[in-house]
Length: 139
Image (cartoon, rainbow, N blue to C red):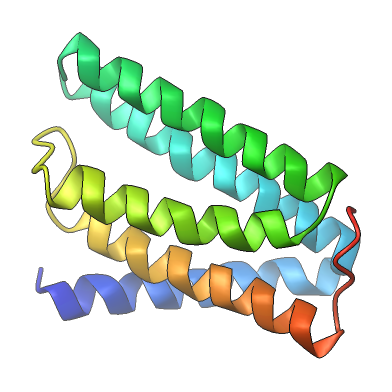
């Protein structure tokens, strides 16, 4: 799969995710995005565990799961801006950790698809907050 196709696949997947979450109302939508951030980190733990990654990789992925779970919780309890930041940070996690370092337990196309998804969602949340169509207050 080409890089462009992977990015497009991620962005289109995120568009579907947003279109499914948005009708639920802002508070529920924010909850869905928080759970999604945790699941996005959990997927890499699954790749590492099922792909026979070294224990150091597995520990790093669990660390990422803890970090992104904390950011998701802050997004729910403190400010929704943490969710936008968390999704943007997850985009960096995808590319810098798994694409640049060639984590062989992750499919080649996945970090770029995840990048398209993560950036789309980070920007979407930020735009909603800036436009005032979503409250920055915790859900």
